[in-house]
Structures are given as structure tokens and as C-alpha cells.
Amino acid sequence: MLNMPAGQIFALSKGIGDLSPATRREVERAYIDTLAVLCAGWNEPVTRALRQTYPHVRAPWEAVSPSDAETTALTWGTAAHALDYDDVHMTSVTHPSAVLVPAIEAVARLVPGTGGRKAGAFAVGLAVNVGLGNAMGFAHYEKGWHATSTIGAVAAGAAIAHLLDLDERAFRSSLAVAAAQSGGLQRNFGTMIKPLQAGLAAQAGIRAAHLARSGLEGPGDVFTGNNGFLAVFEGPPDTRLELDIEAAVAGLSRKLFACCYMAHRPVAAAIRLHEAGASDLLADQDTGVEVEVPPGCLKALTVDIPAIGSEAKFSGKYTVAHALSTGRLGLSAFVPESVASPEFAGIARRVVLRETSTAGEAGVGIDRGSVTVSLVRGGSVAARISIEAYPGSPAAPITDAALEAKLSDCIAMGAPHEKDLAARFRSMAKQFARNA
Image (cartoon, rainbow, N blue to C red; front, side, top):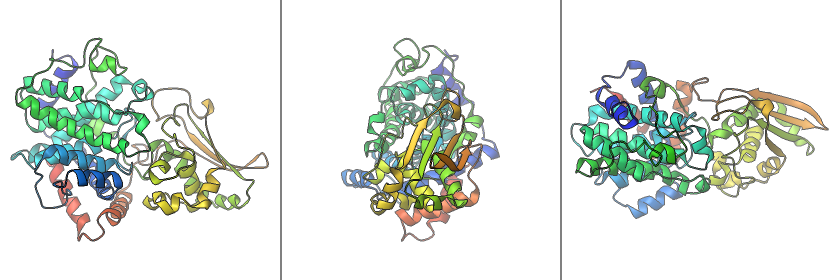
């Protein structure tokens, strides 16, 4: 059974060895990016609700060991996804690190001797996340599942099983228990429940590994058969997974804007139009804004004109309008004053979004084709920019300077009075990414 998914994942865990320097560097960047956005989301309403419910949970930068790994990971994972600013894997359409980093960090702080296994746990969990996402295809996401939490629960179960060095029986059972908790709906996008679903996936992975370690048993391979995980969630019922740690880690995209990733190419094009001076054309109320994207690339942009910040993150019209007007889309774009601005709302009402085959052939996933933003006046195109690569993606990776700027911006929002927090985050990231 080692040639089927559960056996493949166990074999990957046992044979992982030391990570290469390049992979460890990317793991370190994933950790610091996740800690940054977790910090920025620490005082968001959804996180405050969890902190009120679980008052024993402290911030990960506080020198206090968690008293309970599950509720700690739930809170940390929710905070990390609260602003939709955490990293993305495009072909699986997931936010892996917001699930994996909180789960691994919460358990490692409570279980002695696991510190040297954190990087390996992250690598295993990420490879599982990507392998399952690729096997299930875009059909899973198109069905309305929140893949971050459906796939993420199982990926976290694999990561914590590796962290705890479970034997084969317990490892397979950890995957089965995690799959039993897998869920999450796109209907919740634009509300507090979306980030909660990431936290629930982190919590589910920990619970799965702990129960399996205590003797709870499930099927030997929860993924196979017509009633197994893959078939139920729109994938092929019996297939081998492609589990490639190096490719999975190298395939992460880090966000430059705190909104739905499907808006990032339109936003980047709008910023370039602003930098070229084209935004001056918006003074003419007859100037319209046309945004063309490949088929399927508006699916998550479900909000027309937003009323609150969480809705604005899923409004293609608002994000493009703000970027055109200001030349940026930072965290401040989603505070109440910005979302309520008549200026941005007025421009947003002039934005037309449409999917068109000319922007890219119909295909799988969101990383294809190109996005075009045009300013149109009197039936003629006055200015136009097209973009192919997602900003922050492997094709246009985030620079060290941009990551540092993001870290500073996040700390200023979430913990402005903490001293030397950026340096502490860097030190924590190096510890997380070290080999055993």
C-alpha cells in the first residue's frame, strides 16, 4: 500500500532527510511572512472573538508556552488568514502557510525535542497540500469548496504526524482523522468565517495526530475508493500523488496586497497605469475602467461595491479603483474610512469586470493568460496595461526589500508598541527553518 496516497505520504515523511539550503531559505521566508500577517491580523474582529473565547491563548511572539495546542493553532491560523494577506499556492488555490505554520509552532512549543523537525514538518505538509490540490484539480475549487481548509486539514494532519514522528499505523490514522474534519465553503468568503476556516484546518491537523497517537484508528488509506477523500472532493478515486518538496516550496506566492489573490493582477495593472499618469483621466466622469481576465478568474471576486473591509478584499471593482486612484493597495485601503470613501466608491462604480477568452484560453487554475486594465473614454481606449505574472509569484517573486516593507507594515498595524519585533521574527524564522 506504499504506492497509494497514504503510503506515499508516510514514505515521504520517513525519507525526507535534510532540506537543501535553498529550500530552507524559502521555508524561512514562508514563516516570517506568515508571522507578519498573523501579527497584522491579531486585533481584527474575528481574532478578538477567538481571543475572548479562549483567553489563555497568547500571541506567538510572547515568551509564554501555549497551554493548549489546538485552540492556540485555531486562533493563530485564523489571525494569519484574517486579512487575506498570507501566501498562496496557485495550482491548488490554497493558502498553505496560514494553516501549517500555526499548527506546527503550537505543537512544537509544547512537545520537547520537536524543534529540529519543524522545517521538515512544514515541507511534508506543504508537499501533501500541493499533491492533493494537483490531484483534485480546479474542479474542487470550482464546486465551491474552500480548498485552504478542505485540503489544509489533511496537510496539517500529515505535518503534525511528521513532527511527532508517528509510526505507520498512527500516521495513516492521523490522515484519516484529519480527513474526517475536512470542510469549508466559499459561501463564507467576505465574512469572518473564511479566516476561521483556515484556523479550523490547523486545529483539525493537531487533533488528528494527537488522537491517532493515542490509538484511534481509521482506514489504512482514506484517500482511495469511490467513497474516499479524493473521489468525494471531485478528484480521481485511485491515483498516486505527486509529492515533490522542492517544487512545492518553490511554488509559493507571497502577497503584496491584502486582498483576494484573483484581484492581484488587475491591481498591479492599475498601479502601473497610475504610475504612468493615466489616473488623471479619471477626473472626467465619462472615463470608464474595463478589466479583462481569463475565464474563471473572477470566481472569488463576489462583492460588487463593498460596505466593510472584509468585503472590499473580494471586490475587484473596489481594489482596482483604489489602486488606480492612489497607486498602492496597502493595509490602510481596507480600514472603514477608505472603504466608505465616496471617491473610491465613485470610481468603483465605473469599473467593468469581465472574463474573456482573449485574455487566456479556458484551462485549469488561475495562473494562466493575462489581465488587461483599460481606461476608456468616448468609446476609445485612452490607456491600457496588460500583466501576465501574478506579483509575488515564482514568475515575479517578492524581493527581500518588499518582504521587509510588508513585515514593517504588518507590525505597525498589529503590535506597534512591541520593541525589536522584526528582529525577533527573523530569529524565530531561522529557528523554524533549521534542519535537525
